[in-house]
Image 1: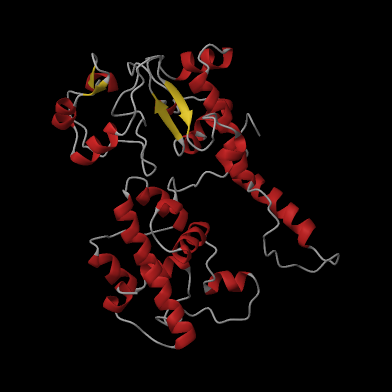
Image 2 (image 1 turned 45 degrees about the horizontal axis):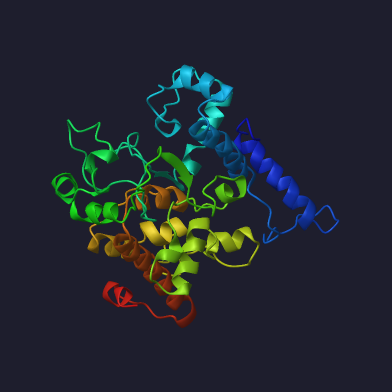
Length: 336
């Protein structure tokens, strides 16, 4: 698992075998698998182990593995994170390459002389929401390095240069980066560990959305709700039926469709009105987790807050209908 990426079908069968063994009651009849025993997701654990190999490609350029894969699949001028899959990749390279999604969630460029950090393609900011710039890419300045914005005599940021290239938000994020007067070479750092080195456990528990819900100034119930939403474990009726709870599948809010998370948050007419009031048109959504990863990866905390509270309002309205038989308008939901 540390070298090859297992097919998802095999990973699912392994999980079913583990759950079937521990949740069975000794009989041949089916058993309900409620979860909660702490089993790791095999596919995600496989990716986190492969990310260890990707980390070695980034941090140990002199290793034989790094030299062979670099020579075959990407230029010495690029890092592993900017590499492409290639036209005829080996299965080992394809497996390691897939682990970039894990590394991109917690890796950051820490600089000494800043001569090898490209401001456009490297994740080098300290912001927990995103280590990338929000400023639009400027044609003709693709080779700008971080050291181009440092006033060398005093080792401080050159505010004039920063303000001419970046927007105000990025300027504030950049000047928060401390400059090392001693210099030294640029290096990669894993933000999810105390010592800055990647290890498999931290990669496995890295938030798949790339966002730290705990950093948002919202109530604990909203943070818990968002975590359950990202895991697709909110007790919508389709989930309850899967767990053999005897309930009707009809949506309690509209009554015309089977209730699922995707229907409730992205297809129901009231939900669409709420998103439209924010100027959002998500189109067809196939997975709540994929939607979070795609949509929230480039948003700041203020935008995240608005979207999270909108999701919470939809769920709050659904529960009011189920338990209190009270229907609310879009304005009432926004005030909830």
